[in-house]
Each structure stands twice: as C-alpha cells, then as structure tokens.
Image (cartoon, rainbow, N blue to C red; front, side, top):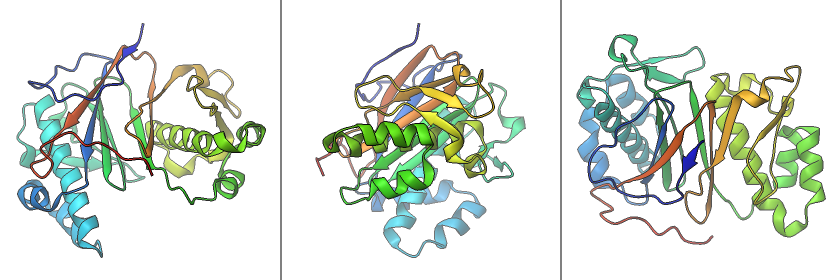
Length: 261
C-alpha cells in the first residue's frame, strides 16, 4: 500500500532511497544570488554555456541553483562527487545519469516555476514531476480548449466558476508530469489522454487513446507544494512510498512560507 505525507521536512541525514520509493525535494528559488555563486563551480561546461544564454540574471541564477542542487542530491544517492557527475541526454533533451555512473538504476526529474523547484528521485521506473505557479490572470478556458482532451474540457465546463482555476492547474500539472514520465514530451499530443481534474478528488490517469489497458499502469499524485502553486507526480506502478523533503539554501535558512496569490 502506497503511503505519503503532506509535510515537507528537512532531514537530519540523507534519506535512504528504497526500491520503488520516491523522494521529492522542494527548493525555494526566492533568493538565490549567493547560492548561485557557490554552486556555479559544480556545473559542467555545457551547463555553464546554457546558463549564460539566459537574458536575465535572475533566470540565470535560478538555473544554476537548480542544476547545482540536482548534482548535490544525486551525489548523495550515488557515490560520486557533484562536480564529477555526468549527464547524458535523450533525443528529446531529457537528462539522465551516464550509464557507467548509475549502478543503482536511479531515475530523476526536475521542474521549476517562479520561485519554486521540485526534484524527484526514484530507484524504479521513470518518474515525471511538474510544478506550476498559479497565475491569477491566466485565461484557462482558452488553454484548455487548445490542449485538453474532450473529456477533460467537458469536466472543466461542468464545474462552477469558483473551482475551474484549481481544476485547470490540477489537469495541467498531471498532464505535464505524465509526458515527462513517459519521456515523450510534447511529441505525445496532450489531447490524446485524459486526467481527472475535479478538486479534492483522487488524481488519476483516466484514459489513453488507443491504449485502453495502459492507464492502470501509471500512478498519479498531487504534491501540495505550497499556497500559490500546483504540482503533480507521475510514475509507473508500483509506488510504495513518497517522501517529501525541504532543501534549504544558504540564502534561505528557514523553510519558506508560500503566500497566497
């Protein structure tokens, strides 16, 4: 039976990642200038080149911090120092550990939005994660009409106006996490599969067009990352436990209280 907690805690020591468990780490990107300078030296040349292509310093710093923290956390799961970790990339650009460094079959996925990043790690099948800042002015009806399945659009329209924004972000984060977990990215049309979306109902992959038996193979879980954000995790079954951890940067020595937007 899968178990999880909604609390985000800073562990006293590096957690042990058991097979088919998932560790999710939350990182505040609210104030990162000092951490970006400290973590810059961990990055490989291709990551440095990518960081330098960002136009705004804030975006550059956030990229450096997320990549630096990813390397630090990976080094805690495998016996390799952060700066020596090597990434390979799928045809669609998804990073994964170099095969000769991954004896424990570690999978990971990363997402960041606005002032928050989430990093998921598992010793099992692939995992996908997505976090989104809940923009209060987004025209969710138009986005849904373009990207959601007919079943999802109908479910969204049936809800009262007061619930539609939450339902939209439920659906969007679940869909994004799913296509990241499969590794297909946007090559899989978003309207060819359907997620549950009604607030306070269980997160589920309902149907996949042309693959009626496939939906039951996938685990979907909302993560409740903080007020003002929506997030979802998707992985292949079985999933035994999800542990939620807070990674504290030097710039932010206290857990972040995410504010209502």
